[in-house]
Amino acid sequence: MAVSSAPGKVYLFGEHAVVYGEPAVPCAIELRARVDVEQRTDSKLRVHAEDLSLDGFTVEYAGEPEGRPDVDVSESLLNAAMGYVDSAIEQVRDVTGEDDVGFDVTIESDIPLGAGLGSSAAVAVAAIDAGTRELGTTLEIDELAERAYRTEHEVQGGQASRADTFCSATGGAVRVEGDDCRSLEAPELPIVIGFDGGAGDTGELVAGVRDLREEYEFAADTVEAIGDIVRRGEDALAAGDIEELGRLMNFNHGLLSALGVSSRTLDSMVWAARDAGALGAKLTGAGGGGCIVGLDDTNETETALSYTLGCEDAFRAELAETGVERLE
Figure 1 (tube, rainbow, N blue to C red):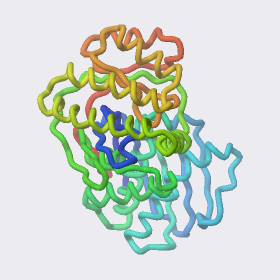
Figure 2 (spheres, helix red, strand yellow):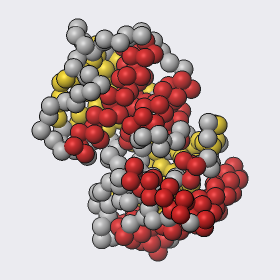
Figure 3 (cartoon, rainbow, N blue to C red):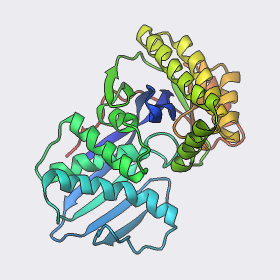
Figure 4 (spheres, rainbow, N blue to C red):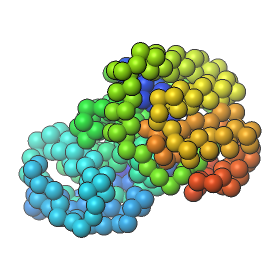
């Protein structure tokens, strides 16, 4: 058996705009998905999922591309829980040339699904790493990130960027612009996260921004403006200027709201964080529900969020200096 874990992430800047070639700066956080993979004696795939903000379940099936597991859960639940695992295992088979190999896969995750914290990227990275190592192949980090990106690209209908998977594979703060992915030096960041308990539909939200860009020139300009914020944010990050990072995060949230990807609960949490003294606060990820990220080295923002209507959880998160970890 091989066991790997990979971290989630928050976006300091650049979600949505990164899909259109603008830069983005996510950073890995110490919430992790752990994936155990053990080779079977047949070609079936058995997946047991725990702690994915879903009720745990186990499914076993032959894994034919045209088929789906016969399990009594909703279609959206099935897609969320199985799509990334299916595609990740196909990457394992492609890398190793073992087309008919089967696996027992167990997933445990601290990262809520669809909340903007990179759960799918972390599962894809950890599953590919553990699966290939179970068959005797250890991937270099760059190839692991590439294979995980292909997983998300397939499942998300070609709308994925390399940001989430590269960040999860490498850890730390990263910069992604198109195919150019690199690590960044970052100071200690006083990250506070608020979670409304919900999950946005990434595909629908990305499609909505695409439609706006096609219909309105000023929407395309808004996407470019987010790219400009990212570039200024890189300078602030390099200088360790946390106050400037916060100001730019506030601008970024306003532009994301203008593109229609925020929500009432996300806006409420953002304003609660700012009113409590956070240097900056914004949604993180696709939006529509899920999480906000704020910067505050006091306890005030976390406390304020815990009393904010619509916020189900508030917590601090440390920067994850390492990406994928090979546990067994």
